[in-house]
Image (cartoon, rainbow, N blue to C red; front, side, top):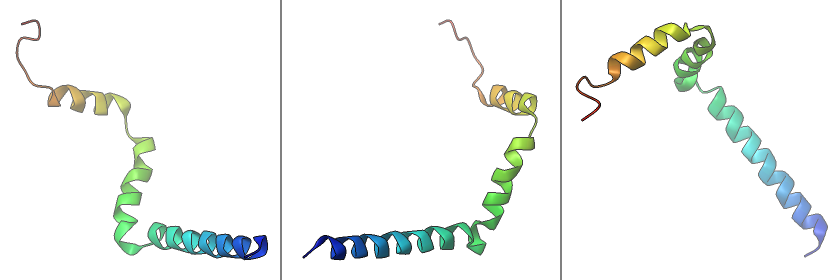
Length: 63
C-alpha cells in the first residue's frame, strides 16, 4: 500500500467523523440542552453562587 491510499482512508474517516459531529450537534433531541447551555452566559453569577451555598450541608465545619 502506498501513501496515497493512507491519505484517502484518512480523508474518508475525517469526513465521516465530521458528518457524525454535525448530526449530533443538529439532532432534535439535543436542541433543548443546547438552548439551556446557551443561556448560561446570561445567568446572574450571584444567583448561581447563592444556589451553591444553599446546596452545602449545614452543620459545624470546624469539628
